[in-house]
Length: 457
Image (cartoon, rainbow, N blue to C red; front, side, top):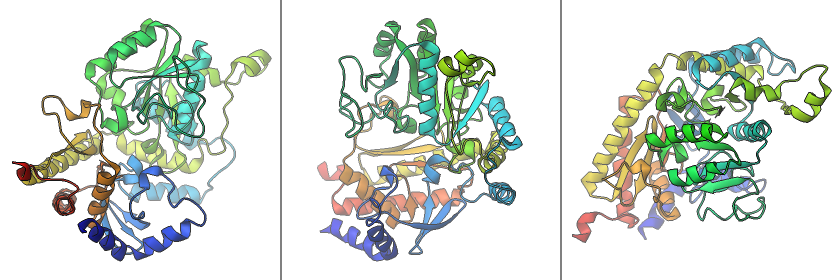
């Protein structure tokens, strides 16, 4: 069968990756992030530079995973390499505060509208975990409200309502569902349902409404502009805090993130990925000073410190290496030019991909949310923006086949369906990707995974 042929081709050209994957099964599950799962096995990268990376078999890829959206300046950007290398030579962890972390926080406060105060953590998931504690301590309420499909990390509070059916918990670690909530504290309403949002908030028992910046899955399902403003108005009316997760969109959508672009300032925001210069261990919570005050230690105030203050610790919080990378990144990001460059290249890419789709008369579409790109195979609703379609879904077989054919043609998107364009992707990179995408479509057509509409006419 044709599909067997592409699998065989992948195996033949990725022998070292196969050996490493088989070896890894002796010590772990073979991957360290669910999105890296692919069939027949994942690739193992050996080096990366700019917009390109190479695997252990010597295969070269134009990379759009970009560190899961972290690398706005591409791989191994010289400014970041210099900043991090210089700091490591002076020490990686002092076990004390450091001046670079102060400069890092000041830059965040200058750029993000919501940021009156900053608290550093080590990941986006951890940032949202801290916010969940802050909003409950500040409001005295227990429940958190979120739209279905919106993702805020993998903690118990938020790993619900992400995968349909939304009223069922993810296996293994979530408490039973109650009549009006999930995980005894997280209320899930239909994606982009303003009426359900208003009804839930009217009960005045919601501590915070969490919204993913750009909409669900980094803009795969966007949010109507009026819904952003309705969320801000209704949360203020009902004493609920508004949280915008800017783990991906922060500094990518604009120097001030998604919130600056849509003109809605939340009470709190989580930051990750770009904020730490693309290094692991750099993330933050920022927001209103009076809410963030709950983290402050007050000498001599025993009752406050024991019963009212929110305890927060973390070995790697604001370590100098992350601070050095974060400062270097944000100084470049603050100018706003890299965002414009990345978005222009994303627009060029999706336009070219759609030409390849139309040329073959395939039922599919490519679209971008600023500099994030998305691929969807299925009926694209032309009467509304595809990014607002909450019913989109693709079979795992299709996604895995797309991923495999893109890799075989030298392009790497996360799961084959989502990618992030950096400021260092060139027109040559984009045009080469468009050509490779056309070849991937031809391979999928040959395997019968997708069909040309011409065959049905």
